[in-house]
Image 1 (cartoon, rainbow, N blue to C red):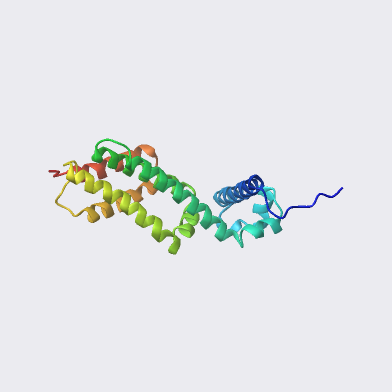
Image 2 (tube, one colour; image 1 turned 180 degrees about the vertical axis):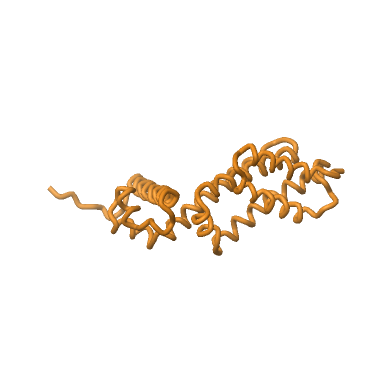
Length: 200
C-alpha cells in the first residue's frame, strides 16, 4: 500500500536533513584542510576529497565547485570560531588591561597555529574580500579593550588607540614565525609591556 505524501516536509525531517547537510559540509572542509596540510595545495583534487570523506564526486560537486572554495569556507569557519573566542575573552568581567592581555595572547596563539598549517594554505585563504569584515571585527575587539584600559589607567595614553591596536596586531602576526609557544609568550609579554609603558 502506497501512502500519499502530504507535500509538506515535517519540521523534524527538515531539521534532520539540515543537520546532515551541515555534517557533510563540515566533513568536506576538515578533510580538504587535512589533505592540503599533508600533501600541499596543488596536489589535492576533488576526487581525493570525495574518497577521503566517503561521499561520491557528484555529491561533492553539489556542495562545492572546486578545492579553493572548500578551503576558503574552511578558513571562514575557523575565523568565525576565533572571533567568537576573542569576543568571549573581551566580555569577561575584570580589569580591562588584564582582559586585553588575554585577548592578545589568544590572538598570538591563533597566529602561531595558523602558520603550522603551512604557508601555501595561509597565503590562499588570507587574501580576498572575504577577509575585510573579520579583520575589522578583530580591530574593533582590540581597540575597544585598549580604550577601556586607557580610561582605567592600565594602558599608556600618549598614543592614539587605533595606532596602539595596529601595533599590537601587526606585532603579534610575528607569532606565526616563532619556534614554540614559549617564544610566543615572550612576544606577548613584550607587546603588553609596551602598552603599559607611560600609563597614566
